[in-house]
Image 1: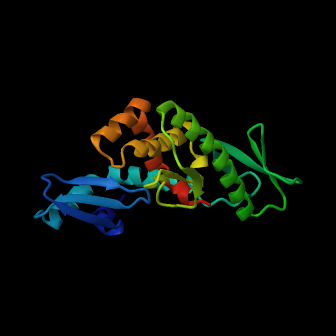
Image 2: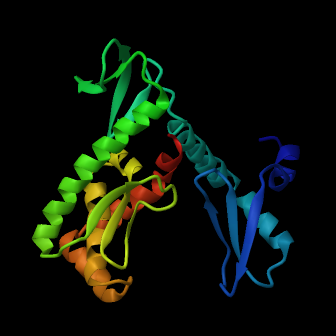
Image 3: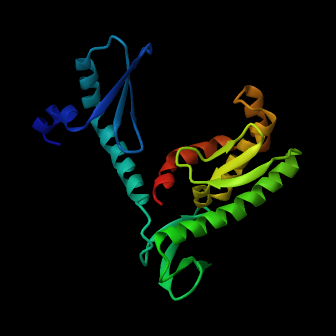
Length: 229
């Protein structure tokens, strides 16, 4: 970056300031590459701008990573050669004559005539089968009973547990690794016992899935899966 460009660096990248009673400045880059500045309530914007300039290399690197991640999760088109995530693994789309989607040797064989809505239906069916099995496995392990298991088209939450112990899971969850699916399943089953997010709730989750925080992190980093189909 040239000197003149550097002087205008803070003007070239949009940023949002969130002020609170904190004592120090902090920078974060969200999933869309936006710069979020967390600052003390009375700190001047001039001080904030200078801080941004000092961190320009870090900001550029993190924004580059965010853009790369966003590109990885571009909308599904079902074109030949496209890579699609299923149960945490990427499969290459291969169009061919047929009546149903099949998986073979790292390839996702998709019927020539299938449109995106049909493929979404296939994913939903697969989710229903896979997730129901995981629910039954952990419900038996935990000694709990649920009312029903349904797949939802939710785009803001991976799962939920109703007041009458009805379990709902976003069918897009089927694109996640099995370990991550298991975490969401365990999370919702634990709500049958504890209806809140109290310490007792999280202790039970940790007892069943000691590495649940790793799964939470994966879901945060890959939330874009909710929007690609």
